[in-house]
Each structure stands twice: as structure tokens, then as C-alpha cells.
Length: 246
Ligand code: URA
Image (cartoon, rainbow, N blue to C red):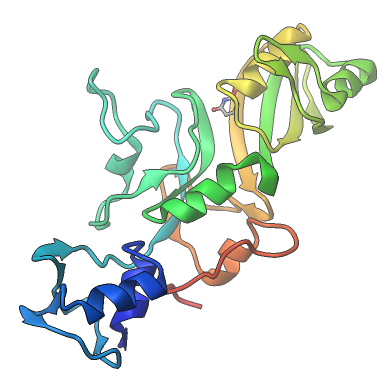
């Protein structure tokens, strides 16, 4: 049970002050009855709340990490009828949207949530949330090539930000390279390696910040805890993580 104004603020309806004003004006109903008492506590799972008689959805925030297989599109619907990532979330009734996209043929870590604010933080360049990828590329990139990519190269959208790269494994005709970037331009990793003559043959995102995919099987997801979410950010967490299991 939480105070009504707090729940309204958490649901993004208004600021705490704004919600108090809405309540004071008699515009908020709980289970069909106008509530003007600031001490009113409600259960967001059970109670029906409306503002000016329009029902308000007080959904709990949910954050999941999915190991996306190749062949699934990172959209909420696909006009071409291809498999979509939400097909992999049976039993999740909330409408979750992907935080950043992965190409059809890219696999790995995909954060999904109904918390738009968290999504913005993760994607906004100023928070510099690193995304780690394992790219299998054709040939063996030389140390000089890796240094060029690390320093930033020119793509059609401008220079890339500095990146961290290291070779994970060398095969006869290809190499597995780890690359860490905090930007998310469309097909960025593929374009970066293409630009230096080492096209990507396979791509997997393995982490957002320090939140790693670990041994989550392909096509499976897990619900994230507060501790998991803290791993997304370095230094100060830019928001209060509420309403989710510790
Ligand atoms: N970079 C790419 O090229 N593709 C992705 O899916 C993600 C990052």
C-alpha cells in the first residue's frame, strides 16, 4: 500500500505536487469514490484509480533481460509477419518495449521494460551506458586496425566515439572480437568493422553496463532485480528505482 499521490507520481501522471493538487481539486477517484484525503493509501494492483473519470493504468514497473535469438525483430509488431521479440515472453502481460534495438540477425542481451524513464537513461549518450558485443569478423584485424576503431572512425553519420576492443579468439579465417561502445547508431558495429575491411559474420550483445547475459539460454529471459538495474550505470544512478523486487 502506498500513498495515492506517490502512486500517481510514479505512474508518470504528474509530479508529487501536481498529483496532490489533482486530489485536492476532487478530480481523482479510487474505486469510483472521489478522494480528497492526502493520507489515502492504495494498492496499485487492486484499486481502480481515475482522473476526471478516465481510468489510470497503474502498472508495476517490470524489467527483463532477454537473450534474443537471431531471426527475431526488435519491434512490437511486424508488418511482414516475422517473429517478434515479445513472442518470447509468454506469461508477461505487461506491454514491454525494447531498450535499443538489435538487428534481425544480431543475438544476445535485450533489455525490455514498461519504464520509459529507465529506457531513456540507458539510451541517452550522456549516461554513457556501455554496450558490449562479441563480433565474429572476417580475417584477422591488425593491432593498428583495432586502434583505429578504438580511437573513432568516420561513418556516414560522423565520427564514432572512442571504443574498447580486444581479440577474444582467432580462427583460421575469422576472429572473435569484443567491442564496447556506448552509442547505438543503426548497425553501428557492423558498419565499423565493414569500414575497416573486416565484415561482421556474427554479432551478439553480451552486456549493458555491468549487467551481463551470463548463461541465460538463447530465447530465454529473466526478470531483473534492483541490483541488476544498478549494474547498468556507473557511478550515481540517475533515478530512484521503485516498485521492484530487491
Ligand atoms: N550494432 C549492430 O551493428 N547491430 C546491432 O544489432 C547492434 C549494434
